[in-house]
Length: 477
Image (cartoon, rainbow, N blue to C red; front, side):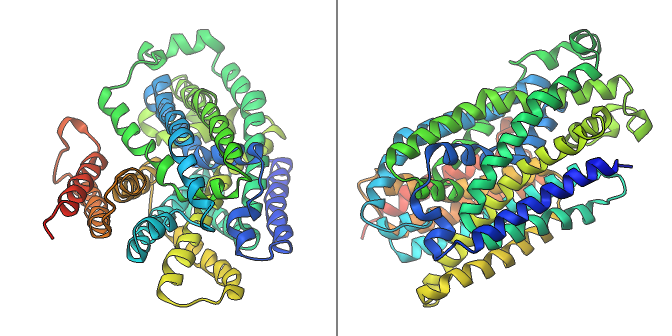
């Protein structure tokens, strides 16, 4: 049973997040404020918001799961985040700001509107919206898993409702300014919680270095203990998302100038790896040590096989943290989850209103803000329902990433770098790439096929997208 002090701290945190949303509701004058924060944000706020969004709760819980399953080598997953952030700062951001100087952009698919045509932008908006709805669902599920491990009286469905409703309500009312400012606070809270509470107390609870080395197989402490196929799968899924992620474009547009955006991306890359990468896997590794030492037997986890790898980290925190610090640490982790959920919700809402509805139905500008808030609410509800039927956070996140990357990455590269910009080729590439990945993922999940060399289906989706784009763009007229 959670102590009343911890529960009070946690409830106060949730109320504070809702308060931020209502505060910015009163200050949002138009969709410019709602979706891109008035286009005058600083590199510090943008950078912390970027890393909070990208790493966030899903990857925090997911990294804990990797640390539990394979040890320190799981940190390489976020090394791909550093590469993606720095590559996009050098290659992508300068080109995007050339477009911003000519057009008032709100979403990522609007780049396709100006470099291809309206139909390409519409399909890109649909793909991006579907992907971010899945990603929002993953964050809500991450929060629910953390809540059920922390508050035993809650079941998973109740936890999903609490997490989902809180994230949806303050995002609906507050818009991007609420998201970015809460992201900054939430990410700092997570960092302080990990550095000064979670890692030191977890390390002490398992007996320090001697306890770790005497309990674990040495492979868990070997940073190179990861197969090349796994590194390739992470790289091909995560690096391209820095080029096609709607949440990231909203922050580029929110930056006051190109220099600010590039500085923010360099800051974000460093915090991705090594900072967050090693913190996440270390806590997961500590959780595995604790299970093997029998520290969780009283909770029904007598062996590693008894525990979902993503539950190890929250169960460990619940076990080792004293009253008061437990509430602070749980608030820190919920902060990380909220910081990603709200951003993904804003991204999906922007896609639906700006890229889909505005392309299909004429929407008066004075009504856009109201439509945006309604769309955010509906999309948040759909994501919440999705979270009730999924079980694995990292799988849902990477599937959402894969669907967007395989559908959108090649058309974006073509739009920015190819001399020949063919709208029909872009549409064909989007549909074929995204469909290939989804079909292969479903067949793999149902064990109808086995991927060669254990390579991720996303790689085949991207290759299919590239082949189709080249074939269609080089067709004889």
